[in-house]
Length: 446
Image (cartoon, rainbow, N blue to C red; front, top):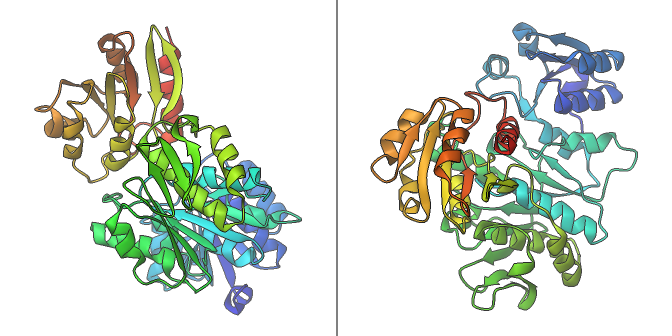
């Protein structure tokens, strides 16, 4: 579980918020020397907890020379891949591991249902946790969705299953990760602000399969040729879902029914989530629940009782007959496409934030479908303007508050205002949650 080199040297933990705090505590509980550091503010409580556990802690910066001498580095997901501390470790030949990898090492009796892909990861992860838990199998949602995986190893009795959302960056540094069930939702260009090309991004996604065995179960999007190609000939059992025709789990559009293993599972109108993409997420989660041993009738009941995640097509209120929909988690173009396609009424679209390297032109075919216009805001405003102005009514503003105010004037009773930004939030907000919370507050203001 713990390499000898780690016991003989010191393990550096980068980032000491929730993830780094849990990682440092777990390492110290096993007697390892720990140096934990973070450049961010407001971490006095976490620092005190780690010091009380016997770790050496530095806040406000990192000792790069000390990191370069470490036996290993455990990186929190909030640490950018190009951060100087990580660069110092890699240049010195220090192995870097994600917190996910540490959790996989620690939780040798917990079966991991691991979800990756470009879009749909968080909702699918939450659905899996809900379906298993409602089916009588304790299964928390952890990983990139919010709660660290390693935190489960600090519990007196870790759960039998965990639903784990994993990003491409985390997969890159998780050589110990061996999913009992692996899910690949879909593939589309993303993170081109951090990867040199889309092939490099997909190569990290392929690492989901690196520890595949004949015991593995792979739940795959049968409508996405790129997903099937990426899975290749990985050992294990394949279970496919589709919305375009029969599969292990599929959407019978003519009958309006989700189907599992050839038997009707749930009428579409009983799934309380907007959009075809959420049908896909539900089908994927149902296949995972079946692989874990949950009966189909319990899966159906759990799907009907699931409520969506905040910031993902979240109806935050209706004001003056206008529905305000928070899709702040749509941080890339492909995710925004899904949000737009879920609209069933005329809408004003808010796009903007920090550009992630993708053109906005894939949105053009959707501009004629009930879109009253686009309000572009933030750093990416000029790029959105250049790509979309010829296709739709478009105005540029600087801030989200200005975008909301303009949308309020454009929208008519019966319309929606959709924040589906197609960009990261880091130009004006600390994360997409903060952006969504600001939108929620602005939408409810009279």
